[in-house]
Image (cartoon, rainbow, N blue to C red; front, top):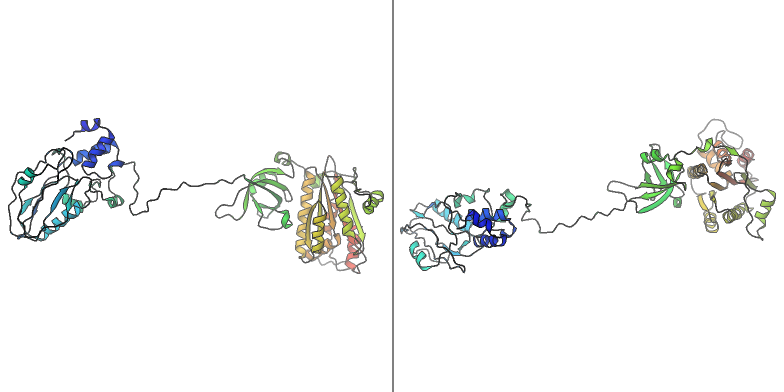
Length: 511
């Protein structure tokens, strides 16, 4: 028997070997102090309760098997077991097998049940170490009872250490009913889920029935500030906004980027601002890619744009810089325009001709000349109520941004695209850029405004509402040269001789 001082002087590996010899379960997982406590508890002999055997049966106790290591003899009571009448109690064979004590409580409970059912004389129980297990029944029922004295003389002792009789433990038959006992001796792991006391208080209680899987490391990939995108801001009525993509003509699309109301107020954003920034993927419950960080607004850093002057308060001036429309020697149309009607930055121009006379081709030549000679100018070609094939031809032959709304689209779409393009041009002019808009055609745009305009009750000749031409005139009149930088130039086409009185009224309003 080791006392506490001797156990404290030993290494953890030696204590684990001793614990294994005593049949303590989970000895490899216990710490040193827990091992010492378990070894001390294992060395304490429990009180020997008296068992009763049924009449007509003589229990027999088998000799313990020898163990390999030197051991100290077991202290057993020197009482002789009195033979009784034959009973129905089955013989129990006990053998010393280190480290296996799972079947011991089951046999002991079965013996208790037999004693409880029958009425027999009391037979003292022999206490064996926790490393012993009960062997299966293999002897006939009517066998005489052997005394414990020959078992001590003929076999090697089975106890390695003396037990401390001063420490008290609960009787063994109470383990069936008490779930608060430690489960280190019998190795019953199922009791860990039922609130058993764990020898290591810092060890997590893992359910036995749960699958034995190692916890996979949580993979948290942060894609914030990885994707960079840009779009034109459209502020909604609730205060938040979306960055519309030019691939969808600045209409609602899957590529929309959400801009919060706080970001709009922080940077002083307006509808039409071209915002470039980093975004992140939408999280659970989100529908859009939110804007995480703003890098540039209309090509400027955010600090410069915050205190800009609105477009309506900028000072307009006459054009002071001429746009060079000469591109090629054999391109006479642009050379004649440059010769007779030169176009300056911030000027309004109107190409008036009948249908099918080449107005769209002339716009194409002007756009290519401006893109070649003035790379600092931001060029936008706005096609309203045109054929889809003309839109494709324009996008492939001109180095400029082409925004279109074909003739098969409703008038509301024509108006919406024209408004977002105009707002974008104004925001760029506020930041000091030179913008040129080539509109084809202003007559069809005025028709669209007339269609969506609310009825005012005043109808002009040709079926034109009195207030329908106000917005097209504001669109065309937004062209101006700004003092101290920035200009907006608009060149549009107008239809005449179409046989429509509405087209004549529209032309008269713009000429």
